[in-house]
Image (cartoon, rainbow, N blue to C red; front, side):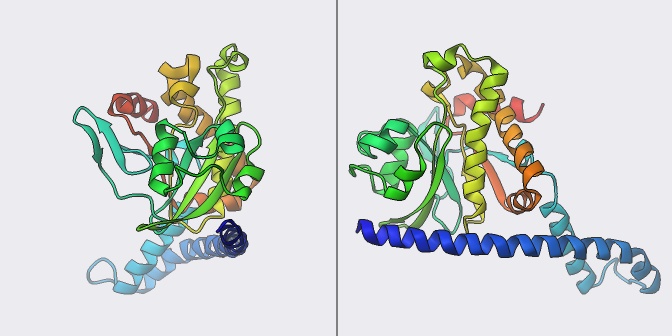
Length: 288
C-alpha cells in the first residue's frame, strides 16, 4: 500500500511539473497574443461595422482577451477571495457545524492542512485534533501512525510544505498541501515583533503557493496558517497577520518568478474562514 502510494506520488509529481512548464510557455504565448490583439483592435473596429455591438466571434475574442489579462494580473493577497467556510466546506456558526460548500475533491481544488511538526515527524495523523484532526478524518487517515514518506521527508521544520495526493474512500482523489506554520505561542516567537512575524509566516504561505503551482487542481482553498493556538500574542490580529504575510509571499513570487505568479493568478484562490466569529475581522482586513 505504502509503495503504491509512493509510486503514484512520484508519477503525479513528474506529470505536474511537466504540466507547469507547458502552462508557463502557454502563459508567455498568451501574453504576446493579448498585446497584439489589443494593438489591432482599433483597426478592426474601424474596418468592421457591428449591428448589435459585437459579433459572436468578437465576443469570444473579447472574453478570451479579458481572461488573458486577468491571468497576467499582479499576484497579491487580495487575489484570494474570502470564503465563509473552512477548507472542508464546513462552517462553524451560531447554529453549530454546517456544510456550506462541497468537500475538497481534486476535481474542485487543492486544500491546505495546518499541520503540527511533531505529528508529521513522529506521531502521524493519529491523535491530531483541531483543523488537522478534522482534515485527517475526512481523508480517512486519522488512524494511521505515519504520514507518507514524501511528506515526512519534505517537512522537517516550521514553514515547510508538501502536497500529496490521497485516494479517499467514496470521494475519489484529494490534493492536500500539508504545511507547518510557526508557533507564535512559544517563547521563541512570543517576543517576536509583528514585522518579524509577518516575514516568518510569509515563508509558509510562499511554500504552499509553490506547491500549489505544480498541482493540477483548478483552485486552492487556503486557510489562516498559524491561527488558533499557534497565533499566541497575535491571535487578536490574526486577520491582519494573514493578509500581510500572504501579501509578502505573493510579492516575492511575483518578483522572482513572474511565470509562476501568472499561473497562480489564473486559478481560483480562496481564503477560507471557518469560524463565524472571525468573519468580520477578516472582512475588515481584506477591505483595507
